[in-house]
Amino acid sequence: MPPPEKRPVLVATEADDTTADMVITELNRKHVPVVRFNPADIGADLKFSARFGTRRPAPVAGQVRTPSRTAILEHVRAVYWRRPVWPAFDRLDEADARFAAAQTRYGLGGVLYALDSPLWINHPLRNAAADYKPTQLAVAIRLGLTVPPTLVTNDVDAAREFITSHGQVIYKTLRWTPYARDGVPVTGWATPVTAVEVDDTLTVAPHLFQARVDKTADIRVLVVGRRVFAVRIDSGLLDWRKDYSALTYTVVDLPDQLTKALRAYLDHFALPTGSFDLAVDRAGDYWWLELNPNGQWGWLEENTGLPMAAAFADLLTQGDPTR
Image 1 (cartoon, one colour):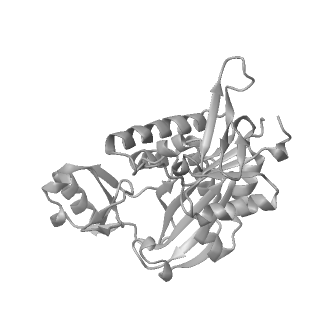
Image 2: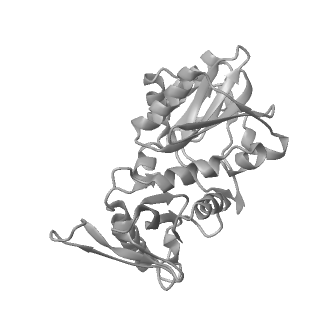
């Protein structure tokens, strides 16, 4: 085993990812070896091999190689699983592409998931477990966070009754999904909805309805390890993501009890980091809205100067303290 300072950090992300670039820049400043790769490059630009055997010192041994870097798997100190892209194998026919894609996910993915306890930010299987909004809501309530009344349903009568009883209600997607209408990409913003708009098409799939918070501002909270970065976002918009040019940012401190609850939330899912969306109402109370286990934060550092990338680099540099 090489000394800790020689063990590399694997960074799995897409080709053009400025957020990953920010973290890699900080790792470079610390002289931490980095091997960056994208699963979509498998082939000449990405090769890997893994060996398994009961007599080996590590459960899995092997390497990941790009044209410029090589990582010995049993020496990896941490994995930054940012936003990698899996290959689609468009050059193959449909059946072969489906087969090759599955072999890559369960081959390369399975090897990486089997690594002997490096720090993951975040492990994709744990991200997936934390990405179900109904589960998120239930965990938030168990931890004492204030959650707006919410209904998930495909029942028309239940939806109309909920909307009528709460007055101002918004619709949210249960998960962001690439979608286009007539070839034009469409994004599912948080949108006001009335009872008369609900029709029988609701029965086709589950919908999430939520009582609208009479908010004065939004709060985006990034937790990295034990460090908490909270930014107030003022916009006047129901969904601030619709117009970034309308946003203003203020660094804020959260109440201690809220900070502890957000850390406990990530601990519940065994996640080292996550981005929370909160709302502040006119009484100054905080409402929990959702968690994005792998949320964007780069633009917040650019607009506030908060050392978010450095916090990621510090955590990745530490790696698993038991190794």
